[in-house]
Length: 271
Image (cartoon, rainbow, N blue to C red; front, side, top):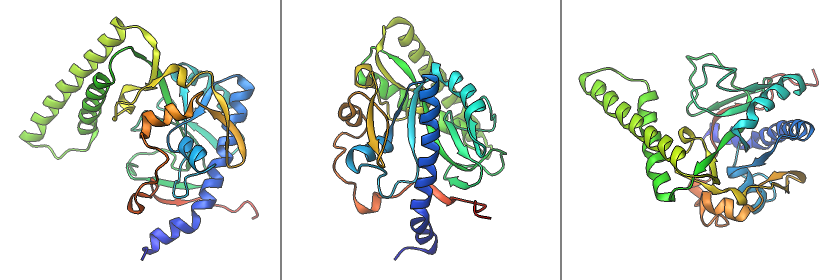
């Protein structure tokens, strides 16, 4: 038996998805107008392939973009986004805790598990934009060890602490660990060739995923919710990197979204 909150989220999920789809349309329009390459990523790409649209229980949209294209995208958004939508990035909003860019709808409300209400930043419905960088030609095992360890250390260091001698020791330990892994990573990027692989920035890649660049480019068109958007050149290879057996449905107790709470529309447009 679902709780009242779970029932509320289920009853309003489709309205939320349609709001996110409207944001994605605007992103697609701006990217095509300004010749900026993006592609559906994560669960959104999985939904396009497995369900023809949203995964039924999903409550967000993920896309990816080369990090070097993001400054142009931000500038385009500042001039081309319609009223009610804003671009949010670490550069435009210093209170953001994660290095993820978002286009948000300000006439809505969306709470994620890691949102911090002591910080002042917009919390409307959004589309996530993940910055992607070239990876060095190293083994997947190396990437998993370095990225996994770096992100674990980062999570400890960014968490709020009740200070004690033990917590201070942990901060020194994880600070040194993060610095060492960062050095390993930057050394690999310096000494090994780049261009064969691409993935999220290190601080956004806790699972150590990397994609062959030729599985991403040149991007192609894909149908999502009956509309055409950009996708990786080889969605099968891309999704296998992320999920392995991606066509199998997860157990029912794993079919849930990312939101704690949302209101798809704060003020009715009919008023």
